[in-house]
Image 1 (cartoon, rainbow, N blue to C red):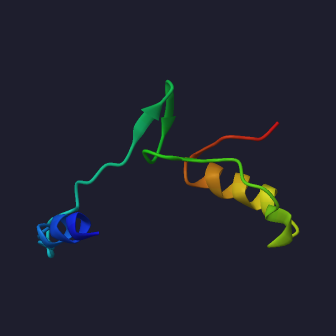
Image 2 (tube, rainbow, N blue to C red; image 1 turned 135 degrees about the horizontal axis):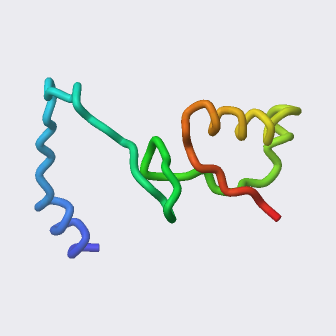
Length: 73
């Protein structure tokens, strides 16, 4: 615990605010497929418990935002 506290105390938080981010581009490729962001939506269970159209809504949102969605088997 002492080592963890010592390591944590050595971390300096230097926020960088008011930076120019007009040219940020999150597009990339995952396994050769173009995507708008460097991550994908992983399969999740029981989306229907939150919303009756849970899986359909997630797929629609992924398509609209150009995010890769992995479908479960």
